[in-house]
Length: 360
Image 1: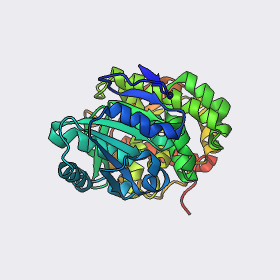
Image 2 (image 1 turned 60 degrees about the vertical axis):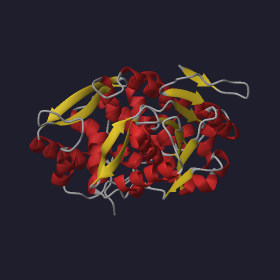
Image 3 (image 1 turned 60 degrees about the horizontal axis):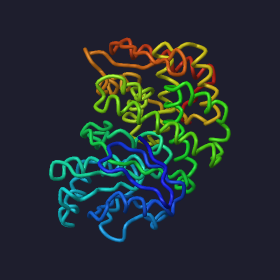
């Protein structure tokens, strides 16, 4: 089920992972209040959202994080939980995340462990979180540079999506979101055709086209995560490009945003897995329009070491995902030596072809 909210709309009771599409920013706070239905609300946000969208936040019980990936730590989650305790939250209270992926992951993780779990609502304010990270209940923090090594599955009751909030995003954050949007498009043929047709409008932030893409991507992820909430099967496809992307992120010390590493991961991992040339060429045109970031100069053996810690791996093999076409995803497993060889050969060929360039 998903819901379109207007001034006369209503919120279903006892929802789980429900999408609530809000057409304008002035309805966000009202929608959250109606979801809470008189219960105590504890908001988690970051400094950027607190500055740019103060009007969507409640008047009290607002925990403001420093913006950025460095906040995604267990120590920060502990601070949130301590603030929740000091605010007098009970099991009937509601934690609401106002922000991007870091805020949503931290707030959701805190909600999952406070008093063994209280209700969690996500209000994503970035393109990446609206099309991907806010949906499906994955929460967590980083450990020793590895992404989301501590975490839990904690489904939000509602995800309140308002594309109008995206108007304040800086260009780099927009490209970050385009990484996850392109990933999702490769997984769904109908969305891929829409993105192909409207890629320039998406890059230039056309509001109508963006809202349609966000709605389609969010609905697709909801469908997948409802079918496989704890990633025992099909949900694995949502990690397309992430084995290499996360490994590069670790090796590069998070110098770029997560979505930028996903863009690089899509370019490299799809070829490493043996993606069909037609599919790869089609995606390469989209990546060129979005503009790939420069590839960090890191040792292939270090990339392999980081990839070996990926949560999709099994049987001592590293899991890569490829595509024979939009919506036609397959799994490729390889050992460490094969991964390293594939990575070196793939990067060399992509640089020669002009599909990638190195930093500097």
